[in-house]
Length: 196
Length: 82
Image (cartoon, rainbow over all chains, first blue to last red; front, side, top):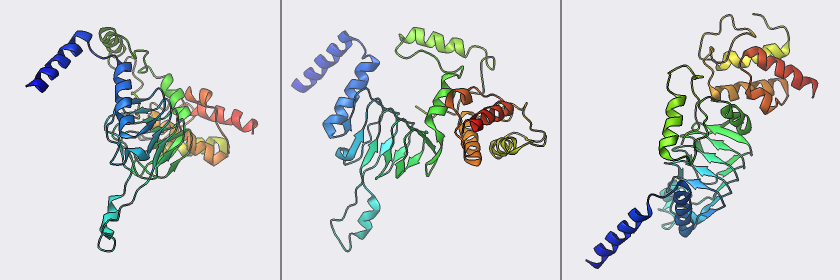
């Protein structure tokens, strides 16, 4: 009963305080992951909670964005097939993400992945091994298709790239709807987004 | 349209290999949009051109290329700077 009352009070306090800002939400997500052992730099936005069973093997640099559904894997379950010979066997690998990277929706980062700074991982990519700095990688297995910096320059000029982040939601919606109000009129066929 | 030199040839080859749309009659005037080349495929085209010619195209100028001819011209300028 006391626990239920505590929950009610907590809910009331949250309501009174109003909804979290995006910045507050980002900070709370980072705090929760740091508490699990993930090493995370400053200015990160992380929308995934899947940091494997060894989150202390994950290192994330500064100003990194990680979209929802991203899975970071720090062990290779296949190693358990060796349990006939070694009953307690397990295999692990670090996952490192440099500064100013973006990891797209539902990407999977396998053990041993090291993503260089200023890189972009496309949605759904399955990444393993070393990704050089300033790479744009997509696909399964993920392949470097070019420079992330060129992709960003192109993206900056897209009619679908708007200055709407952190606007109040009603203003944000109006700006987005205005940009898409006449189908085709401002479209460049859209972007193959890296997702998230 | 027959390419006039190795730069045009490299750009055309990269575009033809990547384009989803019909590439018959492709020439400098062809736009990436009409060829069905989206933003990710554009990056693939540029990478292929750079590898074929052994040059590095500058991001800012390359990002505003909208036609095959634009990319040919940017490649010519980049080669003179190698």
